[in-house]
Image (cartoon, rainbow over all chains, first blue to last red; front, side, top):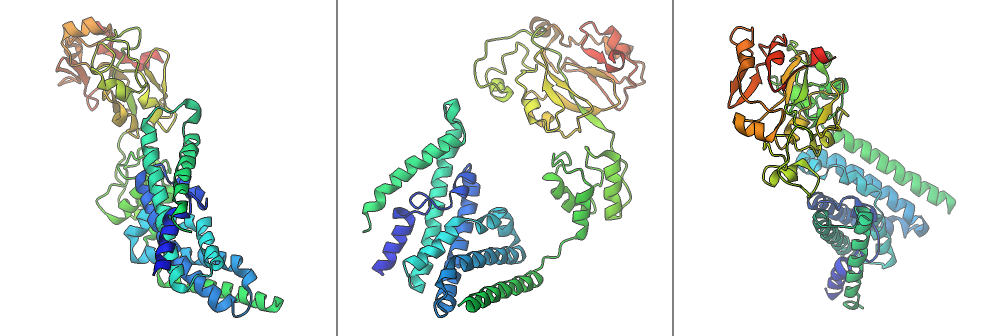
Length: 192
Length: 269
């Protein structure tokens, strides 16, 4: 139990996927202009990360390990994630068109998101158990959403404030991101 | 080793491929094939003139609901309306007259006096919030070009005199500038109409004369000389207004207007 708690806190704060591991920076800057799409993206990422974590764990431990083909894990994970996202898209379109419309473009965008692949690879690296991998997937998604939401809030305020001309737009966003990242480093003492 | 890895990879690929093919069949969403057809005949400007969110929104609406007219696309005009009607198998509605946007103000920098020196954010919207704008006439064009910024068709540009200039050929009557202008100076007028009143001020004559060289002073000379039965130009609320459904563009009111705010585009060109 304590171990799981450490994984949750670790994935959300200490080793936040965006602000400490620097994974998935493309949506972090692309979709953080407004709060609403940021939430949509965050929820889709939580969803896909959890699913991907489960399926890649199963594929790795039930197929690759018994055949001692571990060196194939990257290409297999990519294949699995792409298939998964494609399937989720087809499934959602039929079952819940409203959710499908609100997720919109973000769902296919996640396919090529390195944060998902990073998650699958970290699961292998840390040799998590199935439950641990599941919890890690959910909390990594939550950490991603948290960072995205914080960033979008800051950027919404930035729109209204006076920014020197040279820093307008992306440059100031980069500066904000680095400041936030430094702030998140402060969590690193929490878990050994 | 090599054989195994090849087998695993191709097995996984095949498995996932079959799985996805199966899933896409099983969870296929039936959509009206006419929607894509309508979408292909629409111009694809996504301007929103029809009142729906983009061309796709209109295509969906026109296929789903029989009461949605097939002629709502004003950039496309008659040709697109015919094509849309053909796709959805309906009697073709007659297309509304082609229209263009028109600015009803002639008070540029030279003509209209200013009330104060505005030094804020350079948009009409924010300027209009400060004591109804920097112009002495509270109805006049502010001249920061919000309309030109919102125009997606390269039809509006700010002219040298502080008023936006319209390129008629590019205007598709998408209504964007009409909605954007904080002073509501734009309206859509029939493209073939040549005579327009270039003032929107409801101020009394004395106030108009004080604030602007070219404002309507509601002398009613235009109304009196109008040869159309029932008059095509009326002065209400201290402002002359043309009834475009009656106006025959004869240009008589243009000649008598003492303030030269009724213009005849036929003559100019």
